Length: 247
Image (tube, rainbow, N blue to C red; front, side, top):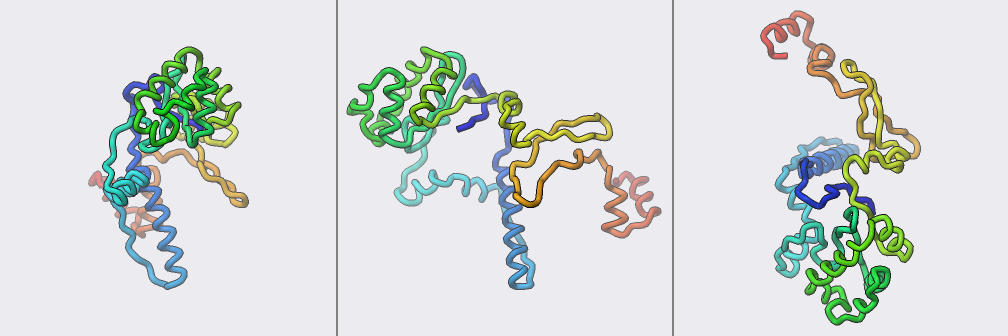
């Protein structure tokens, strides 16, 4: 479990337009699907997406809970709506994420945190009971974790098979050795600022290697190339567009 977020647990200082990003990813997948259909049918088609529909699709199990049993969603912060304990917690020096998926894992975390009696406490003996007593168990876990540093707890929890991970800042995540090992930081030469670090490509192919070969274009860098090569405009027409400040 590798997490990136605000290490102090406070309001985020920056935002990610996640619905915008996911809509772009869905658009890419949809276009590929349409192209694949064209191979079979010989016909192209219109592909339509919206931010609204993407946001609904992203509800996933939360939407299923409402559609199947009419259960409206609550607000649990970083917590899982139907699995407890499954959220972020504050250790002495940093926040960590813990995801308990079954009774065996719950008994193990109780043992690690020095409270084996939790596993037989009627309030916590099943996931349903823990969901009903979410505040109580989360409070107890936070209290126990506050007694030592995140690194100590993570080592102990991982040793007994409890899914967990440190909450990284953006800097922590990008500076992590694993990020470098997976080629997720690329450096390209930019025409105005020189060496420019960029995010790498998150998918890898066994036979066709991916790489970042160009820096982001400067404003209007390829205007002439596109207008002439793609639209067939001659030099005079392009000059007129530039004089009129169209480009």
